[in-house]
Picture 1 (cartoon, rainbow, N blue to C red):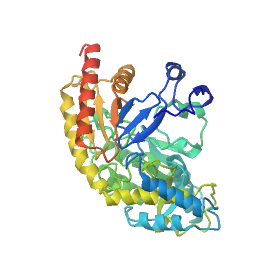
Picture 2: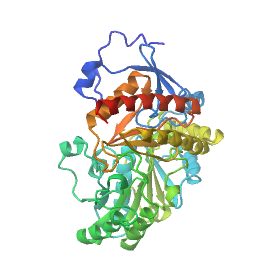
Picture 3: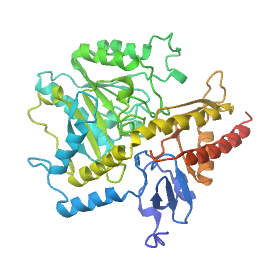
Picture 4: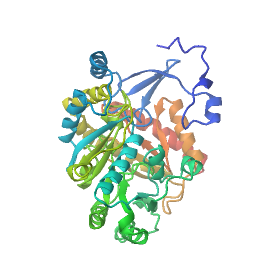
Length: 444
């Protein structure tokens, strides 16, 4: 059903993030309704959403009345009260639930409004920790080339992608150290696993020594990196990073904003690698995108020295967002969607691997219901794939009713965890045709 209130309104009055003038001139869809794993635009066209709202938050699918009811009930009981000097029952309840789900030793939680704010708050909490322990010289942060950790001021500081916003917004806060990422398909160190002996991880020690260990505050990283297209490191990677951090008194911040709440077939992707984070960031799947929500988890060891966390944003620990998240987590548990992500993710990855027969598909990879097709113009050399060609594949898919996205030189997929085999088969069939056409266009 079209939304009659939008008819006649100009799109030009809305500022659209990451949307070019060219896209706006062509016209972008106005999405008016969503149900299950599908979205519907103003003209009534249906799309199979293979990226859970594009930014991947909608884990439980669209149209969940339980979450809407939880939001309504909380708004009527108490819509808001300050997070400073006062508590609210939903934040207390959600913290207790998360303490039972998060990887050890995470057990304390601060609720914010987005993943970017979660990263920002984690960096501030790390600085507070060192400050109260008398190590006030620690301010430097190690991040990785290819990392994405958000776009607020502090989060931009650790943004390792080549998105133009980082360069555009410079100068940023000083003290960022960029390490290489474990991107084995196109290794930035021109090495091959396992003969590389995890040089990308071991080189972090050299960077720390060069910067002075007494000035390094934290290492921040995603368990599985999204900016290369669902790029998981070798199993040895995270134990090496953890040992280096422990040896130098550096806090390990694990960014689970995308990978948490079942996306990879576990509650948190840290479980695949047995990572012990000091701080952990969350968002997206915590509320399935039904309301803005993010969180920072911290260990006892990090929280205990902090006498006073001198950080306040109006909507921290928001009772309505916490109520929505509690309802969302109840659905994830009741319907066993974490297990479903693992099982259905295996089926999805097998189907994607059937597309490796295309000349332009270098590798299919994934974890749970988060997967990618790495594209190349030469399978033997892993030659780069043209961005314009990626864009054409995404556009073709959209024309045929499938929403996918490009990420670096890959196509990325993150469907709602409720997706079924029939929908996966339909998606792969459309992808097959789109890849064939682009391969032919490139003469491959």
